[in-house]
Length: 163
Image (cartoon, rainbow, N blue to C red; front, top):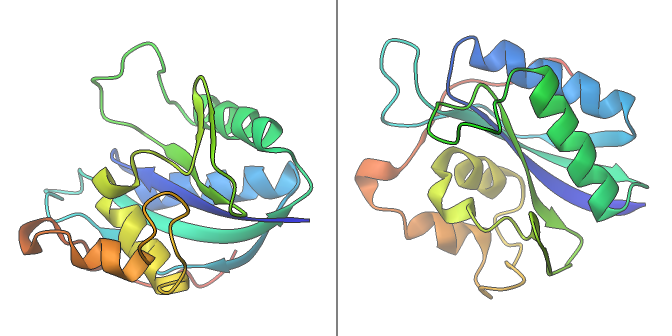
């Protein structure tokens, strides 16, 4: 079993329902959640619109490529439009880390190259594994979060009570 860390992020309401649905679909496809972070909201959240996210520590027997395709399939089912990158994401599932693997094969890039731009995922991951070292940057997840400017720092916005 491989240990993976996934970032789930949504920008369009109902974000929390969509993220929880994504977790259920991932479970049905061979991803076994071990721990799930609290919810985090981006400071730009206005009237319910804006990024909300969590991190999931999980085990899987799926290869990185299989997991990537499953994540994309779940995103499509839940409304993500891959053809229009400028629209807000109804759901985004990132393979933040897969063991200590570093992989760059076209669209499949591990660790997730956008982690530092996804504050809600970075903050959520820091709740789960603050001392884990990023395999490329060599700094801990907590150190990476601490580098975010205060105005970009997400806030904790609740606990997930069941999954």
